[in-house]
Length: 391
Length: 233
Ligand SMILES: Nc1ncnc2c1ncn2[C@@H]1O[C@H](COP(=O)(O)OP(=O)(O)OP(=O)(O)O)[C@@H](O)[C@H]1O
Ligand SMILES: [Mg+2]
Image (cartoon, rainbow over all chains, first blue to last red):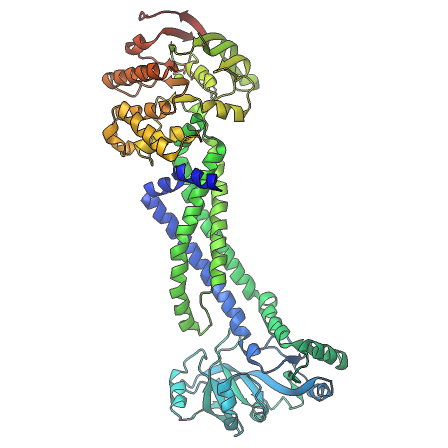
């Protein structure tokens, strides 16, 4: 260890000196790497925002176990199952409550612009909290009035004025078909790719808004277990007890189920993965250009080093030293810029997009990999540094 | 007197198959330790080829080639690299590294030898540059040095590790006659001090007087192996 340190101390930092000598080339390389990093951060940021935002509603459901139709794909495509399964579920040992949740998309008139917009309507019986949103639970009484809804502050679209009015205590009205709805309260959840806005209402209002749905077919069943009962065991018991026309998942499994949909069944995960890969390739190409130009420019010097008795591995170490320096220096602006861009994107899209330490580490690793790969390709040119052709 | 270089029946070919062409024919040459030998000869006669073989930059194909007691004919690439660490090279072009200062360039000649500490390398490189008369330029980049100064840095780099053998291929070709002369004198005096052997290829008749012996290459054959010195042909 000590000798390694001494080795480093006595070694001329040739890679750094070479890079530093050509400041223009260095800046181009750093800009290129920063660019690739920013692209990767944006892609990965949107990707995880997609997963986060599309499981937000799933994660606030007040349930230990969730029942859903086997045909369910995601929140926007839940299909339905018979409410009778909820009654049956209540017979299973360990189950405390089993309540219905109704979810469907609906087109309403934006109360502010009067333009049609699609929102996600969530209905449940207001005598029992169905969501872990304290704001909603404090306003359950309002929902007991017919045609009354609570609206999401984090909704995407032009709702700022309407929200401000409700905030001041003035209910705002809007229309679905020819039915008038009153927004009498607010909560904070946030938009998702699948839903621009969430609207919470009572099961009664929900069923009036969707005349073709009846109370006996529900979207989700929220099961809470008795204190001390193990949700996994109860879920297994439910699975065994209930017919196969209903699926039983623990709360964690249900969030995973939603996330998996977006990961696999939708092209979005692939698109962002591809975007990240493209950014990686762009980075490799830029760094390769810089490194191979640098190797070419120094072929004579490298051949001279070989003639002096330096081995091939020494020349390789110069190129990789350069690659590592570029990766680390380029990463600095590459990680700072996205923080600002995330804030902009979060404002513009109402998506939960922010920097995380794990993503920063992951992109740093990608950057190191990117530069190492470029370096590895660039070192092939070292073969042409032949000291026999030097004299 | 010990023998630094011993070449016996050395042949060398370039190319393969139909294009195979012999450029060195039955070369025999012995150089004693401490000798300064100049090799002259027309262009294309094979001087550089012989020098690169002696220096371990090319692998010898047939015959025997012993340099500093090591047989280089049939040596592995690794052995050749090792052997090179004991030679000092001076090229026609200075081949200094443009991103390194004069001092850093010279230091590269020492870094190969792991027994030297950083402080020692610094001291020796500085002293070496002072010896070649560049004590006031040690932090200059090659771009800011004249041709003669650059070649002097290259000489300092070649000699700083006190190699037992110095090989030089037309070291004065890029220089005007005065700086050419200076460079050769410098090589001579440093070599005398360090007791090393020098094999020098040149076309420059004005510097032949530094040689203990002159050999002449013609069409791949060592024609004259004249002991003593020194008449211009
Ligand atoms: N890499 C090579 N491949 C094929 N032929 C070569 C190669 N290098 C040199 N030759 C040939 O070998 C012969 C000797 O070349 P060499 O460079 O040794 O001559 P030289 O005496 O150094 O000439 P000069 O004084 O011009 O430097 C020449 O005919 C040259 O064309
Ligand atoms: Mg030549």
